[in-house]
Each structure stands twice: as structure tokens, then as C-alpha cells.
Length: 262
Length: 151
Image (tube, rainbow over all chains, first blue to last red):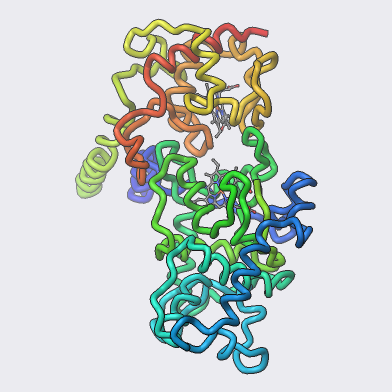
């Protein structure tokens, strides 16, 4: 009894050195809303108009790359992924996922690069390069409207847990966790922005602040920088794990890429 | 006897685990009395005109990210935090000072950053390591500005 009391004292006494926030807030499935619903009507209209939405430049580029044989006659992506053999049309809605061969969690960007290395004998594309963004955008747009749904069983479980940890971890000079803005304060105004629930279903997306198209990891880097935390590397295992946690958290929302954001 | 010994041991663990964190939690020596810091930080004198500028500027305090103050010349003031109009009539100068220095010391789960905190933080961007988000002078300037917001 006494021991338990003292232990509690120790824990609360140390709680000023916060690692995680005390109470893990959640968003109920009835409240689940895409970032789209928090946008200004003009921004929504831009996303909805396939001719005006700048993201389609990357979709078109990706489509061409997908169907084209690379320089030295290696097979095109489309030669393996015809509609009936290995369909990729809805695949983007189910990433990140475990790569059977390595047992590691991969997001869509890494899956594209693995296919290049394994089946096309090509070097991986650089993160945030127009080619990788294009291929990712093309595949994501094929899954538009498909509900996000990912597997977190088996080997995926430890990544999901790591992603969840990061989401609730206080960090940076401002010592904030993702959950404090996106679970506790969605709908509130942070200067000119309305804080959304922080879902990844619109990515890769065109962001006006970037004046270009970018990946979900770029968005995560911006949120980390915003709280003055050192952002992690593009494609890092931790951001990929966060991506899995976000996808599970967003399960049921429709895929929207190419999204348009402020 | 046995119980007493194990309690003492636990107490020691308690001290060693937490003692250091609280010691260098803040950027400089600060005396907290109740929910206030009575003495100006480093004995600095605040300037309300500079304080207003720090309060609104994106490059400095940028408090308008979360707070509104009526009649302030800044568009799109946020509403994550409470409205600070009239704050100078509601809180003492020392209470205002403590809230800016270490809001997370008062409300452990708050989203308001602790602007004079340097210790016990993780993954701080290299650009900001070792220094508080606002200097003693900048905090005193904001305090001087908020103190005047009495209606």
C-alpha cells in the first residue's frame, strides 16, 4: 500500500519532466473529419477542380513514368501491374504496410523505390524529387475515394506502437505533442489556420505555403519545426511509423490526393 | 523498520530522478511564490511598446497565434488560448510573469509553451538549443504590455 503510494509520488514528482502527456486524448469515429472540411471554400474548390488543381501536374507526370520503359529497356511499372495481374489501383489506401521480403514497414514512396531496385534494376528515386512525388501522386490518385484502411497486426504492430508514441510525445523547445493540437484543439484557430485533426489522407498534396507539391513527411517536418523540434529525415523509420499510426487513426476517411492545402 | 528503510530508499530514488530536472528547468534563477514570480527577471525593466511588438510579431513571441487582445493591431488572432483583453485587471504582474515564464509548470498538460524554459526538453531543433524561447528582457517587455491591458 505504502509502497504504491510512494511510487505514485515518484511518478507525479517527476512528471514535470514530461515525456508523454498524461491523458491520451482520442478522436471518436463519429467526429472523424478530413482536413478538407477545415479549408476555406476557395481552397476546397481548387482541390475539387481537376483542371485547376496544380497537383494533377504531378499525377500526369507519374502516369507517364508508370507506363514508360526506363532508359535501358527495363520493364515499365505497368508491365508488371496490369489491371488483372497485380492491380495497384487501390493499393495506396492500404499503405504503409509490411514488405514481406524484408519484414520492414514501407510507405508508398519506399514501395515504389523497392520495385525500382528489385524489378527494374534502377537506383532509388530521391525523396521529394518530382519523379517520386509524381509516381506517388499517380498511385494515390488511383485510390481516390477509397477508404483508408491499414493492417497493424503481426510485424506491423511494433511500428504502430512507435508511431503512437511519437504522436503523444512532447518535444521541441515548445514541448508539445502532436495530440495536443490535433486531438485536443482541432477546430480552434491558430492565427489564420484552423487546426484540423491532422490526417494524411490528402497527401501527397499541393501546399500554397510551399508553392509546390510535397509528401506527407514534408508536412510532418513542418509540424515538428513549428514546435521547434529537430525534424526527422525524409523516409525515416519513425515518420513511416507515424504515417501508419495516422492511417489507422484515419481509417474510413476517403483518399483525397492530390489535396490542396494552405 | 523494514518499511522505513524501503521508503527512504524510494525517497532517494525520487530525489535523484527529479532533482536535476527542476534545478535547470528554467533559463535563469527565478523565485516562485505561490502562483507568481514577484521579482522582474534579471532585474530588467519592461517596455510596453516593445512588448506589444513582441506579442504580435511572428519572429518574436507571436502570442497572437493563440490569444486575442481587443484593439490590438493584428489580424487573425488565434483562439487556442483564452482572450487576454483585461488581463491586467484579472491577474497580478507576478502572476502574468509566471504564466509566460513557465505555463507548463502551472498547468502540466497545457499547449501554452514555457517561454523561459531550457531544461528537461527533448529533440529541440539545434537552432534553439540551450536558449529560452524568449529572453528575460523580452518577457519583461510583454509583462509591461499585458499589465496595461486593464479593460
